[in-house]
Length: 218
Image 1: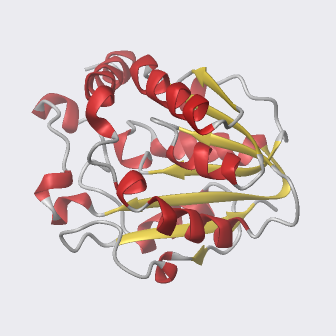
Image 2: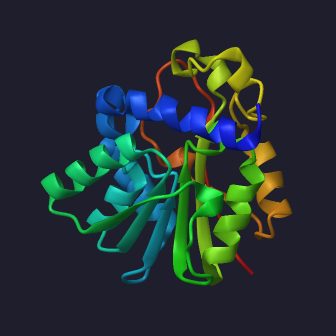
């Protein structure tokens, strides 16, 4: 399966799930917890330019906007973006959502203070490309926020991708914190800091090892 076909299949999968995704999502069921953790992780002194890569239904984008930041969200699934736009309108939040896969998104270099990548890297055929994109669009000293988990521990969180598609995704089983720290270093970021300890209760049932990491662009 060629790269373009892989992306097309992944996009189609998430577009099909979009209408019902927020009904089972952690960021909805525990939105207050996610807001507290991300607010702490952002460590923002005033309004910032935030880019949410692989925004999906707008989980991080909407939280960032509710914290008073200027936010743009990018995703390859028009179905997911439709849900995100409706949610932002309902909440009265001004978020710019644009259809674009992460490594092809035309985002100006050094145009963001914070880039969020939540539960996205495991879905990508080239996960390092997303981290390199984040590094490129951040201003010097800007911060990337990466959250993900080892989804293979809890089968209910696994995708139902066709085996051929799943085999093309190097992180399909999920991510560990040590592995992601290494990836951030390889992408040119400084030492990562973890934030998952701030969750008063685990955000995902089933004992999924998850993490929230921040790292700064030199």
